[in-house]
Length: 415
Image (cartoon, rainbow, N blue to C red):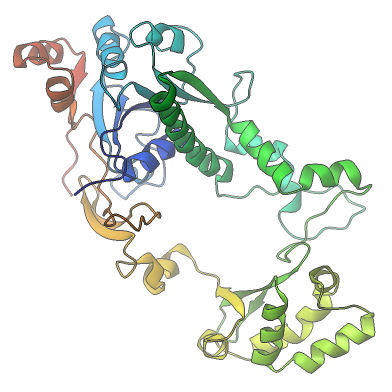
């Protein structure tokens, strides 16, 4: 079964979210992604969330479909293995993805380039100057925690609230994959390799500027403040149902606004609010200004109905809404998070068990959709890589194992 990135091989040295996600994104489109880790596992080997048997769910989630090599790169023999793997000749090879510091030493671009002139290396940094930064430190510097959380008295010092989604890591991971593809295309056209650098902080500040927040800070005299669950600049708010569920209603177009009035029977009520306040609800900014007033009748309407009744009222209309769901409710109730959605399959992950696994969210019309593949066990492909990819003999591999240069696969506790 042909895959859209068939024939491309990327070697990955990574930790945390962005770099593993970048490699996995390429792997889910068919690239052969080989990640290497220390014999005892990398920084993420035991990262939470974990099962009741202390097996990480984080690591297999971000390493699906890759091959795993366990190697001690503190040893010269281990470094030689990785160098040969990264700089191997051949079309579609010679590509390296990492978020580890590489400014000097054997894993630097200049050092590796000596062995393959057209090497492509994509390196994620924390800050452009190479100093350390992670999603959480970048996020707090970009201003968003001051816009997150409940409304506060403007006379008081605002209290920052962090969000739990590592959004900048997620965006960075996709940018890493895109950078690798762009550099590979450049090499095919021009015959040139290159070192590509992406700073996590640049990812965050670029998006902050793209959304207009930097310009708002420059041009407007006042600071923006947290709006709670209201949607800034338009209408959106959360509501309780009579059966103690919560929903969110969003209005970002005039059609959505008209449909909300029809479906709830509150169109005349909304018109009265509009007239009383002297606003024009055809403009989303005016709907935002009147958010509190609009929410009063909507709160009563939602509070008098169950989630199922609201679903029935809104079904087939142009109302944009959705229920709040815990993770357990999502897995139990939402067909989008099930095998009804072809992105998902139920796979057996060694050491953990059987559970839902997402594949790539990208569906290529010219190719059959690829099912997801499970994550490897640490060192699962060590012998295969040494033998098939590097051409080592059985005796050479045995010697590397005996001297502790390579290992794997690790033994997992029985389920």
